[in-house]
Image: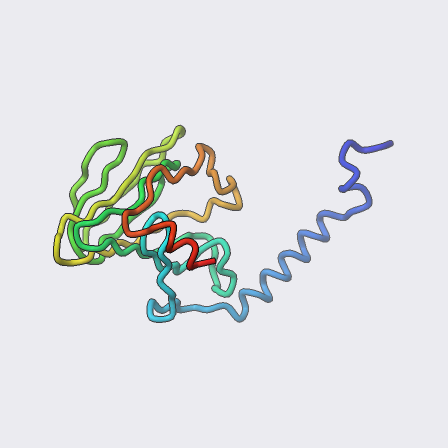
Length: 175
């Protein structure tokens, strides 16, 4: 009998799964337990200034079930504007400002937690620093759904607006 999926013929996917398990165990046995902010490079991208603690492409840590980044928003500035599924938790480390979720403004200050709702068709989100003198820092945490649902995460991930602190010149310097 010929399969419609010839790339699967003759393979033992169970054994491949067990080999993947063993590979993951080996990788995690030497994984980093404590991720220190001082060891993280700052990354200026179209969403703003970020430092990644956990990310789908960071493989040298013990756990990869979450995606965690810190975002710094300069005085009086804002992040990029995104459309995505939501489901994030944001801890405000420093500063004050607000987040718009589908056009509704939610003010926050240091030590607050902002919950971004999970919606089937997604949400539109942007963060604003309302202090003209001090940077705001937020810690963003979400499940690492990239492997389970793809980068589009069900509703599509779209950068609707870049942070004003990022320019195309910055992008060229990164390459």
